Image (tube, rainbow, N blue to C red):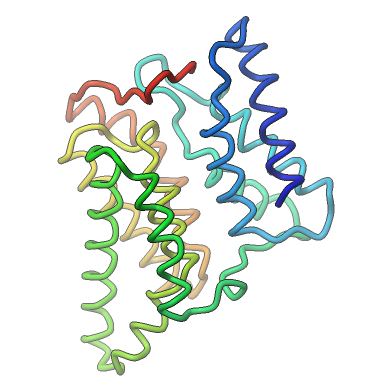
Length: 233
């Protein structure tokens, strides 16, 4: 984890210098949050893949972006997607965090400190509500015990994704109706990937794919661009 954060902060500093021509107030918080998400969710067997994933995480914020709304993809989510597609010696580690209710409270507590603005935490609230409703309906329809539902949906990795990745205000639609549509598409993509294809990386790939439509949704539901306080980029 320390290596990922060190590489991420170094890359953030270099990118601000190169892409912004000069370093404003060093935006270390953004890089740290992205790198923490990467370190908590992924496992690597080689330093090369770890380094590539970290570099993709930071540089994508400066390269893959629109003039109006900023970067298109959540940096960490994109890095995980690319790593899983290109490299065999890395994996998404859900089991590391277990599936107990106590562990699930850790990212919720930390996320509460991060989601201070309504335009940020509203996305997490919408996503969690839609996910639990849609997957809850599926469990009811299948007649499965609710213990299975609790086991599958109360794990720390799921809440890390909900609080730190899909909530990124620079990549999700700005309007509340756009957020609802965006989260619905992510949940349905996750449902298809996990309930039909039986692949537990559904949320990651669904968010990456749905993010491609975020600029279009922003055009349909026009809303002022979100600005972090003292954000340099």
